[in-house]
Image (cartoon, rainbow, N blue to C red; front, side, top):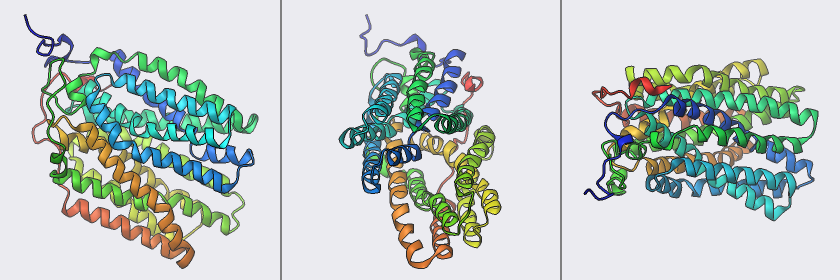
Length: 426
């Protein structure tokens, strides 16, 4: 009689193929999760200001949440590589977000909000990587590009719908109601998660070990192998510089509109946020298809290259209509980077069993870049002015393009495996 560690699992054989219910459940998880997370960020700052919090206290709790998210990336990846039930981790993360929203809604005292935002920040190392891991576990490596494109479309659509609802709710009632809506949105999110069948998520695939088909934890390469991957190192450097350049662009553009006395600045800033999401929703499935045809590297160069162009255009003008047109390039960058990030990491770690910790390492690099960005370019803007700061941003973004051009190898598998995975992208 075979031991449990060597007993093949019927649901994870080579002919493994997920049920459509699981694939459609993942669609809805992406939609509602993006909607739930849309309630944080700017809405938290505005709500706390409405509660007569000082700017220093608001900045402190928001920074604490961001730091918690940064520190959770690598431990979250290690956890995802170790634990079989990725759905349970998503459920735990959603529950933490709901608790954070409840604290902000019902007990907005400084220590409790600090704890709540730290909890919400920790989910940054779990939720996004877990969705990518579940996607890989469901459809496999060959079909992952199209699946990631579909994920991105549903997530962007969810963000847009939630932002519209929260804006209307906040206007019609109060900022209190926004966090009630966040709590309410977790209910259909849990229901969608329940529709993803646990047996459909191949444990080996979800960790980057596609040939593992037993109940035991798959063998994993040493962590040091991740530091020896040219693709992973170059890609991490590109994303660090991309986020370093990109994270401060919208805040700086919004500040410029206010300083020049733009009467519709709040509407313009809202449009600057919304328009790129529309581009992402439209482009993401196409990117997923083209990633297998063109390869990853050409698309990455397009996504990274759109950022220095946008920065140069922002340096030339603060005219609102032109800024809105230029901001469409942010959607191009967001769609390319959003789809390619989990895909390139999957390429670079395929067969290692270290997919999720690699996501954590790259996520940490991105988070550090985004964290430094606002402070660094804020200093440059104060000392040298509008044009100089956007030229500086363009220079940093251009370095990311050059690294991708000269050091980033193509990671697309040379021969895509033929398997029943391919039609299961929906």
